[in-house]
Length: 502
Ligand code: ME8
Figure 1 (cartoon, protein in one colour):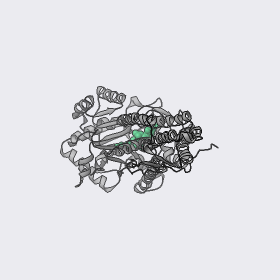
Figure 2: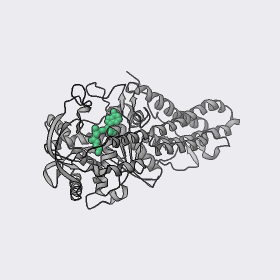
Figure 3: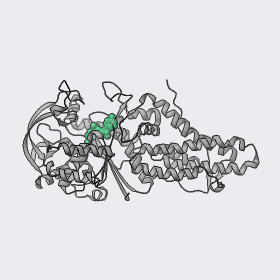
Figure 4: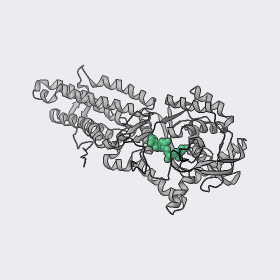
């Protein structure tokens, strides 16, 4: 792992408000960003919104607004949701900004000057919901797009095309050799399968769409929204402007995306970069897709989960927990939204919250709230486990598995709770002769809480700071605790108040 970690999220369409799918990718990436920052890495994390194209323009029209007014409002709802979920992005990048448009045009000019674009007539079926051409084969029985249940439009246009075919062998070789890591492994196989089927050059412009970035060499056409959206990763770093310091420093990095957009990220994007003479991403990590209580999330079914509502009910930390703990990151899975209350109560109110409450209140009651960190006498139980979990957490984050790292956090919680049950400090406290044993036990437990503050920082930014504070330590913005010879302990209100279901 190098000293720098650069993470890039998809820029989400602003045709609707942020939903759980968007929050899923972004919270997971935030946990990764926080973890590596806490390990002293120079982390860069970029998110943003994808604001051009027919899909956004149609929604603006329905809302009776100009496209710019509409995307300004919608983009702000994403920014707000990320703030409420404690996302620590360095950049929130918008494709309708002048900076992005100017830089995207410079990139188009570079592709044109390099001879990588050509003009051709194109006829095909276009699905606005997908913002892409689809083939007859992909349609369902009624002739609709299977994802959007709408008939695609037949389009016949003169378009500019990108010479993808010139780059396919190089991209394939980069993926095969893992120079461009496509993860998880099943995604790498899926992408390599695409090369076997063969892929056509793709059109990079639209004649009839007006809400987009005009091509500098053909002002009557705008960029195909996807191409200009991919450029966002480097325009956000200053590429194509006269200050590309951040670009030089932080590119290439890791693109973290959902599997629905793997082809764009693992094939088209590296090919465009090669044409520009830029290194491809170091890694494309494509996570799986989830259903909600067994069904595809959809407005019609009415099971679209709004991340803001999760924060309202469970707090920022609680929402982050519910988003990350459902199933292995990378796989497909089901989000049990019907069980959010139980999951929150069991893991956070009971296991984690109670542990902190029990340890701090007993340390206050039996040991006057002051325990020397070196009061341990030989048989520490938690500290060796902490070392083991520390290594496991590093491995999990290296493999982009925040969910696994989260399991290690709870392994510590579980062991600490069990230790309390085994040693029964309330019995030890009855006899002054046990004072030393009691101090040793609490040095171990409080050392465990100190580790817990650090371990939980990528997941629970608010609770981790509170845990550190309650045992008399500070937690830096980077998630490191201050050192102290003595734990000065205070009990306060529960970290995670229980939720009573209606
Ligand atoms: O595709 N399960 O934007 P988008 C898991 N603008 N993740 C999900 C999900 C689900 N059920 N639903 C959505 C776009 N996602 C383009 C991207 S990037 C240059 C341009 C997440 O608003 C997942 O990250 O449709 C997926 O890739 C993304 O939302 C699609 O967001």
